[in-house]
Amino acid sequence: MTDLPPVIQQAVDAANAGDTDAFLALFADDGAVDDWGRIFRGHQAIRGWSDKEFIGVRASLKVTGVRRSGATTTVSAQVGGDGFNGPSDFAFTVNGDRITLMRITG
Image 1 (cartoon, rainbow, N blue to C red):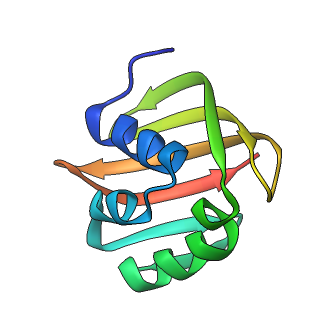
Image 2 (tube, one colour):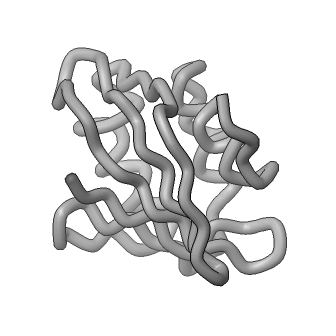
Image 3 (spheres, rainbow, N blue to C red):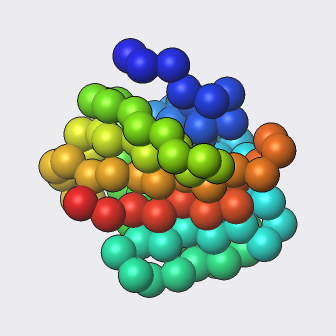
């Protein structure tokens, strides 16, 4: 696997472990998930999204590539689980040791 910045590696690990609390703890208080244009801002909104569409459906991420541009690291992954299955890109914007945005695209 390609080396990821620690906070992003922790997010992938938390998702793969099914640990919603650990996943949320990596986001800034006003952090957001942009899931194909649907924005979920703040821990409560991200938890609601994740419970229905990410960790709650046992999503798994197998990292297949990493690209960096400034403060954004894009992780290409094969997604598995009981929800969406297939390739996706997860573009993480990080400030310090917290995720401010995780944008999911194809």
